[in-house]
Length: 502
Ligand code: GLN
Image (tube, rainbow, N blue to C red; front, side, top):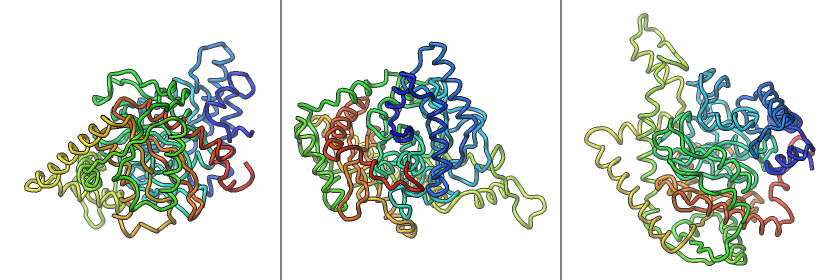
């Protein structure tokens, strides 16, 4: 099998047995990027020289007999909302064009120390706001399954680079679904850990109480391996959990669901979900029954208000977090036209007008309004109360079920332009993923098959209680095994080969 088609775990084995070096593997990824990224546009920045230097260094360490991390030498792509020392970081926005951070996010430090060559930075909706990557200031990423369709968002680049075989691993961030929904529509795997499970230090904040970084991969085991590498306490993040990383790798390897109670959430299935997506979901549930799991039906009535609560809490935090882009310290600075001696406020206004896209402005305005005196209680305060109700619904559901399941995204990948004129229809993409962010619980998406209507990937979501992340890996891995057996191999083996045979 060509190197670029191998999973991270397979690549790790090849390096351990001396059948391939990190330099060879990294070069294969870089060649593939050179070959197809003109079409896919998963990357905003590629660091060939830096990646190859890191690969050579890890090969040297291995040759010297050093003890290395399981993923040492496996190249990785990083979403452009994560700061990387010496590598441009824009969060998909004009306002940060050309900015080169002076420090690394904690998770990047962990990648570097473990010896994972960083291939480059992936495209995304501006400041992680969107579900299609069409809101990137640098043009959209295309879905490798159909170049006329969206790769999901906001982390479309991190998902598309996996599906196009440009990288075996990627980092994403998930505030309302931006790891899981792109995974769903590209036939890849994505996991949002428990809130606080992975350090947020060095993530450019969107909504701090919801943001969580996590793994984007092609297999459930790879996601577990990457999760356990980037997870764990960080004193630089005051919301970081001071607890060991859940035993996710062990759970993924065991892939055992016998006796597990799997809850189907009534509010997250059926009406509103594309028939082919719903059908693949139901078949996947049957596979879990065959593997020995027990199915229970649960109801989470407050989930119907999740989207509304999210679109108050999230923009409120956005309006505060994005106030720092003020043209004074770093990033873009635009001088207002026709003003001789502009004040700081006039420079800020001109810069923010030119530097932010429409969706970002929409959310800043919404959030500023929701937080304004006189409206705070009615909007932000009510949304926070709904948030508590949603957490209560989860707590009740997890009394009768070990994990909850649903389709990840209500539809398969839609064509470019389909939802750009109707923000609400774009927001609906996250109907099933947002509750997890509001409650801080972990969620994982893996492919459930191709929908009959359009032959495009559908996603299966698994939600677990906070700090029980291992459960979603156990269920995901067991399901993946059965699905691969049914399909005769991974779903991604069927992705169109793009430029030429990979
Ligand atoms: N699509 C959702 C939004 O636009 C989620 C984004 C995210 O998870 N970063 O807010």
